[in-house]
Length: 166
Image 1 (cartoon, helix red, strand yellow):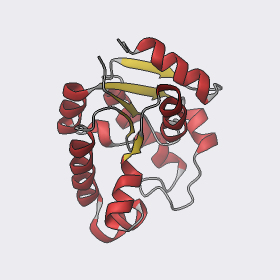
Image 2 (spheres, rainbow, N blue to C red):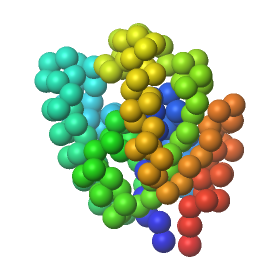
Image 3 (tube, rainbow, N blue to C red):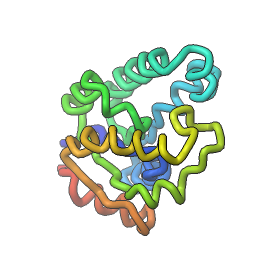
Image 4 (tube, rainbow, N blue to C red):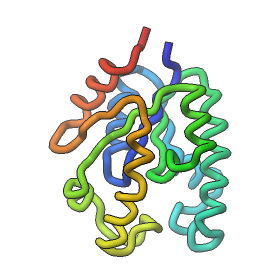
């Protein structure tokens, strides 16, 4: 039986929003790795990037993922770059199922604004390059869910239908 569902995908794909709905439908706790990191460090993700760099953030991300991979049951929404790391993928594959929330680049552009809250996003070109770079990693997930023009409750129901819950 699946004990952990890891939601992966690009920024703006709906990991946090769908995670909340999935958590309600499954009656499982929701954990958002970015929020967990911010709480433990008492800094925003943007501040961690600015003060300590991306490598330190990725270190923290791995530590929190390892901790969360030991919870009895849960929905875990990962940061957009977490699944790129091979060590993270090993943890995820060993302890649950990765579900890729697949949002088109045009949907991402509508949902994500370069407002300074996302440290790896500063311009439209950068968004496209980052999306293209991460796409091949997201495709490694065993479950793919299209999210464009869909409501979170419908997406959550589809995830439950595709992930063996018995």
